[in-house]
Every structure is written in structure tokens, then in C-alpha cells.
Amino acid sequence: MDAAFTAEQDEIRRTLREILGKRCGPDEVKAAVRTAAGHDRELWQQLARQLGLPGIAIAEEYGGVGCGPADLALACEETGRALLPSPLLATAALCVPLITALGTDAQRSALLRPLASGGLSAALAVPGPALATALALTGEDAEGRWSGGGRAGGVQARADASGGGWRLYGEAAQVLDGHSAGLLLVAAHTGGFARSRTLLFLVREDAPGLVRSRQAVLDETRPQARIELRDAPAELLGDDGADVLGALAATGRTAASVLAAEAVGAADQALARTVEYVRQREQFGRAIGSFQAVKHRLADLYVRVQAARSAAYYAAWDPDQGGLALAQALETLRVTAGEAIQLHGGIGFTWEHDAHLYFKRAAADELLFGPVHRLRAHAADRAGLFADPSATAATAAAPVGASATAAAPPVPGPTPTSPPASPRTPPPPPAQEKVAV
View 1 (spheres, rainbow, N blue to C red):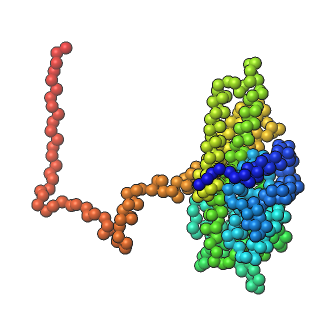
View 2 (tube, rainbow, N blue to C red):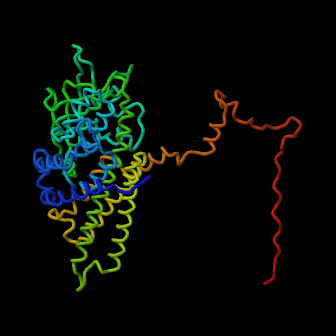
């Protein structure tokens, strides 16, 4: 594997950093998140026209750039550095892979082109706080119970009585960019208990029975919405027999590598701003960055960021390692943002300073896609790190169809010729000798 970046990838990084440096400063970010869309629409269109950012991982036959997930992760590292509020994550990292994997030819032709051009944005609606579970980041759910399971809650789907489609009823409480997306991919449960399964449905923004409301969230650069579906018409994505859970798990692995790169970019920028501050801030007649204790703390952060970057780059080429890379990147961002607030002193925790933006991004991402310890635990389970080797070997060596009783060795019992053991009186303790002192 050649992990070196190509000239085209370096150009994407340079151009994107230049544009975001001019158009996405801290003041512009705070102004953009308070708009109705939650992001700067003009900047989003500029990124779509000049770089093809929404379609960077879409095939050229559908109007995209034709790059891979590694290029998308590289671009998201730069957007994370600027804390860019945009529908890039929800559209390009979550919805585009699902449409590509599950959609019919007609659906891919009709949807991927406007998504690649930036004229249409999409959002993945998953019931409740189950996004990490649905994407198989923190655990496997082969039955798809997170979508409702036929019981109250979640989103339920039923075939239209007229035979012209499907109807959805239910709600999803935490939908990234759900308030402004023109297209919703809704995970819904259908079939009841007899044919229980989870399917994905397409719901347009103007569908009757669709109610969307933007929620107050911790991180305003990650806008979320509550989606209510009141007998709303929907179109099935793909066919009835599609492997939706498998497609969601594959999308989760790719999205984890993209999120890891984004978190690394944010952590690196938080560290850079902190280093710049401690070089200028003086205490006791000298810059605080010259004190040994501050140097040690910054050195530890630098090592953390570089290690997380290495893990994120590796996951960009091998998405199976995305869960571990995401855990390390989220932890690095949380620690770096917390240290940045501490080292900025009295100004670091104020609302006017932008250090709190990085800390909120770290906390919100861990709530949505973590927590870190569950990401690591699931990765360890998949790798079999804590499996009992003796049990695994016994299971592999046992003949097929053999019962547990036949495989187990017999328990030895007392022989008939042996006399029964009789209780014995314990011998008295030895007498103690008296020694003259």
C-alpha cells in the first residue's frame, strides 16, 4: 500500500484550505449556523462548483468527480479544521453510499447527479439516538431492533392500499441536517412480527405529512432536526429484498474513517491556535510557552494528534479499521480541546472566544457516534481479542453434530474396591518448649 498523497490530492487540500481560510473564519462560522439553513449556502455552492466537493466520491457517470473515500476523508480533514457547517457529512458520507449500494438504476440516475452538483442535499433519518448502532459502530444488531421492531416507537412502514407506494408513520429525533435537506433517507420497520425487517425509504421535502423542526443542540455546527412522519408517502430505496443492515454497516465503516479525519483536522487546528497563543501571552515577564510545564503539555498533545492522524489515514485506505481510528480521533479532539481551554486561561472559557467551538464539536460527535469506550469495545469484539482461545479451539476441534455430553470427558468417580474415607481426628499441636530468658 502506498500511503503517499498524489499531486491531485495535495491540490485538493491546498485549494480547500485556501477557500476556507478566506470564507470560513470563526465569525463567519458563528454567523452561518444562525441562518435558517444552518450553513452558508453561497459557500456550499462555491465548493460544489470549484472542487465538486459534494460529489467527490460519486462516480463520473453520475456527474461526480470519481474519487474514492480516501479523497473524501482528506477533504473532510480540512473542513474539520475550519469547523465548516455544511451538509457534506450527511450527504456525501452517509446518504450517497447507501443510494449507490441499494438504489435501482433509475434511482441512482435521478438522485446522484443533483447530489453531486450540490443542488440537492440529503439526510439519513434513524429513529431515536441509534445512529451509531444503525451504522454498526458500537455494536451489531442483526435483527434491526433499533428501527422499532414492530413495537411502539421508531418509524413504521406499510404498503399503500392503492398499491402505489408506501406510507410511513413515526418520528426520528436526531437527524443531521434534517431541517434543510431536500431528500430524506428514512430507516423504517415493516412486516410486523411475521416478516420483520428494516428497509430504507426516500421522502421528499415537500411530502404531505412530513413535519420537520430544528432542535437546540450542543454543537451548532452540527445542526439536527426532529422528523415527524404522519402517514407520509415514501418510495422504497432499491427492492424489498435488499440487505439494508449490511449496507448500513458498510456505510458506517467508511463514515467512521471520514469522521476520524475530520476530528483530526479540528484537533490539529485547536493545537495550532493554542501554540500561537502561548507564544504571545506573557506572564512574569516571559511568554508562558517558555515554561517547561507548558512545553510538556503541548508535546503530549502533538504526539496525540500525530498518532490520531496516522490512524485516520490508515483507515482511509482500509475502512475496516474505521472504528478504532474514530475512537482515537474523538478522544484526541476531546483532550486537545480541553487543554486548549485550559492553556488559554481566563479567556479560553468565554463565549466570545472560539475555543469552546472545538470542545463542543468533540462532545457532540462522541454523543452521536460513540462513546469512545464502546467504539473500542466493538472493534475488539470484531477482532476477537477477548475470546477464550481454549473454547474456540475446542469448538473448532469438536466433530460436527457431536453433543456437548459426548464431547465432554467423563467425570471420575470412586472405585468399588476403595474403602470409604473415614474422618480422622487432627493430631494435637506440638508442645511448646519453655526457654529461660
